Length: 229
Image: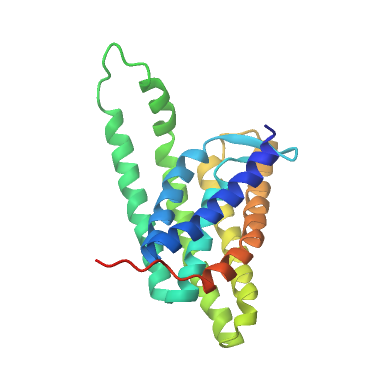
C-alpha cells in the first residue's frame, strides 16, 4: 500500500481516536491519548519515510494529534487542564527515557534475538527523547498560550473556533518542528535529507492541524458517556 494512503488513513484513525477516547472517558481519555501518542511518537519518529516524493518521519501524525488534544481541553475545560496534559506527557517522557536506558543494562540471554533491535531503537532514545521533551514542552505551552490569547482577543465567539485552533497550532507546530528536528537529527542525515525532513515535518504537521479543525468542532458538541462510579 502506498505511503500516501497509509498517511491519510493514520490521520483519520488517530484524530478519530481522540474523539472516541473523549466520548468514552471524558477529559481523562484525552490525557491517556496524549500520553499514548507521545510515547509511540518517540519511536515512530526514528523511521524515515517518503511521502509525495519528500523525506519525512513516521511520527508526525502522532505528535500533531497531541495538539488536537490540548485544543479540545482548552476549549472545553480551560487553560489549566490543557497544561495538565502537557505536564503529564512531559513526566511520562522522563520515565520513558529512564526506563528505556535501564533496560539496556540487562545482559541478554544467549537465546535472545531481540536485544540488537532494542539497542538500535533505545540507543537513539536519549537524543530523540530529549529533543522531543524540549520541542514538546515549548511548543505545547506556546499552543495553550496562543489559543487563549486569540480567544481573549476575539471574545466568546464560537464562530472563531477555527481561528484559535489553527492560529495557535500552526505557530506552535513550527516551534516544535524546528526545535525537535535540529536537536534530534542534526548531523545524522545528509544535509539535503535533513533539510527535507525539517521542512516536511512542519508541512505535514500543519496539514494535520488544518484537517483536525472539524474534529475540534465535533468535540465541542460531544458529551462524554456518563459513568456511575
